[in-house]
Image (cartoon, rainbow, N blue to C red):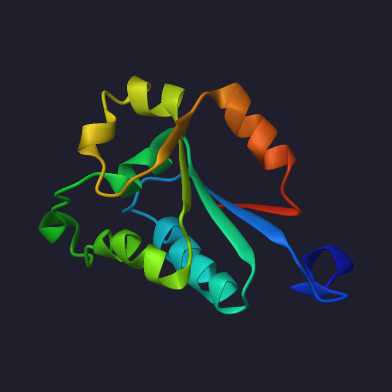
Length: 130
């Protein structure tokens, strides 16, 4: 593991941001990303999630997955708080471009502009995009 990916360096907690850019189904990115988030939280790191582009669809209420023959994993997002993952950010422009509002989402999030999201990403030790 490279130095910039060490979970602990001198005992310090690292700030990890996972950026979700893909729709929830059709690829493995969303589900695999969620699994990595849960693993990172198990190592007591400062974990946050950002949802941009089609990634905002991962948080939409009432997902029906019968037609794609995949398990609906969206309820897992409601369980994140139990893993001390409470920092969920959604890019306003991505949400609006897809006709979504905060009422369409199944969890509480902080909505940010693209510029604010960029500033937040710059404050992280590690940013991983899915």
